[in-house]
Length: 238
Ligand code: ADP
Image (cartoon, protein in one colour):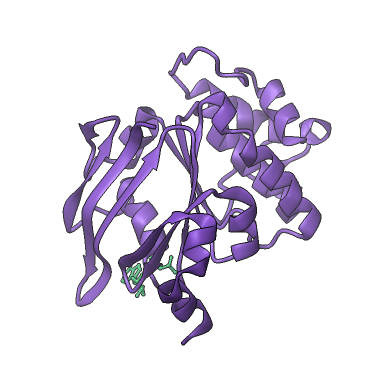
């Protein structure tokens, strides 16, 4: 498997706080990689430093072999990396359909084999066809999350970064989400997901990386990582 995203020695300081202390991480083509770690371990900062929300203090981010360290968020998106936030970013006064339509129209990419080229097909995939005429602002939380996924897919990404995708979802909604995300790799979309919900991560990810105090302390097959004494200590507070 070729590395799609290759993060090297990534460091981010906020004043005296070291949020990332030199992290190496790769996301390979076709995989669903999980990044876990306790609160404050640097997971969100890692995503923000890749997607142009923060400028890394040092280190490099390469995308398909090209250095994209510190490029602005819109350039990251154009390069093919989508990011879903914990709060779905939709226009509340526009309909579900209009939201997806705008996102689709702003996508200039012409990837072949991309299965959801119209707003209707995207909405059907995420199970929101029946709500396409509703204003996004009245959607219940779980549905808004699914809309967020449709909006990310509308940019035709090769990699989607998911930030706590199941936070606030009930078990049924979580199962729906897992079922959708599991299908991404077969459509050429790799995934990197951050969450502290181990049950979700075990369902979704064959590989896990673990952050603790801004450093990566484990990286490997999910079962091995969850058996790693260093990881158990972090999670069980050893
Ligand atoms: P996680 O996502 O794993 O909970 P974060 O990346 O949010 O961790 O935070 C890592 C560390 O960086 C924490 O100590 C947090 O307080 C700090 N931090 C994150 N963002 C900022 C910011 N914008 N300004 C100052 N400190 C920040």
